[in-house]
Length: 207
Image (cartoon, rainbow, N blue to C red; front, side):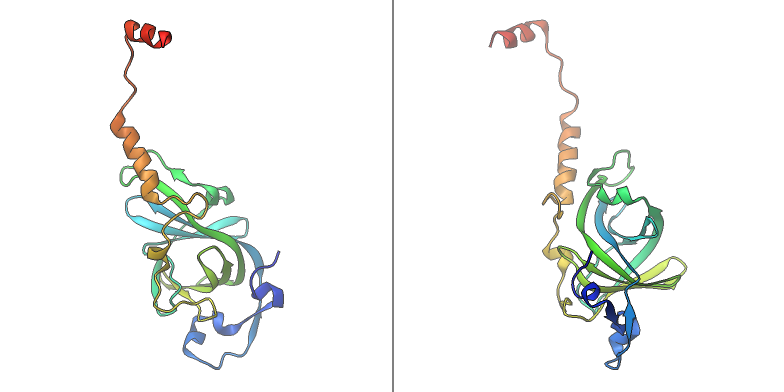
C-alpha cells in the first residue's frame, strides 16, 4: 500500500524532525519504517478531547490531544500519552455508556493510511493521508506525561488555518459529537415508553 508522496518515493525528507522546522539546511533523507493506519476520534468525556491513535506494533498507540491536531506548523498542541488500544477500538463511533461526566459521544473525526517514519521513546514522526489531515507530523516528549504534536512544514501545511473548527463532523457518518449526544439526551428525556391500557391496546388493534 502506498500513500501520498513519501511511500511512492521510498524516502522522506529530514524535515520530519522538529529541528528542521527551524532550518533550511535539512538535506538528508530517512526511510519509511512502517506503513500502517491512523485514526483521530473526538470524545466527549470528562473533557472534550481528541484521541490520536497510530497503529504501531499490533496496537493503537494513543495520545489525548485536548485542542485537536492542527495543519498550521506554528501551532504546538499538547498531547498526553494514554494506554495503548486494540486495533478494533479505532473503528468505534457511537456513545460510550456509563460515563460519570460528558455525554460519552465518540466520532471518528479523521482516519486513513499512515507511514511511521521514526519511532523512539521520546519522538515519533509520521505521515498521514486522511480526509482532513495530510502530510507530516511529529510528536516529541517534553515531560513525564507531556508530548507536543506539531505539523511539519510541507506542501500540506496550512498556516493560519483551524481545521478542527472548519471541519467538525465525522468522516464516516457526517455527524458531529453533538448530534450523537443529542440522540442520547432525547432518549433520556423521553424516559421509558408508557404502558398502554387494555382499552388503548384494543383501540389500536382496530385501527
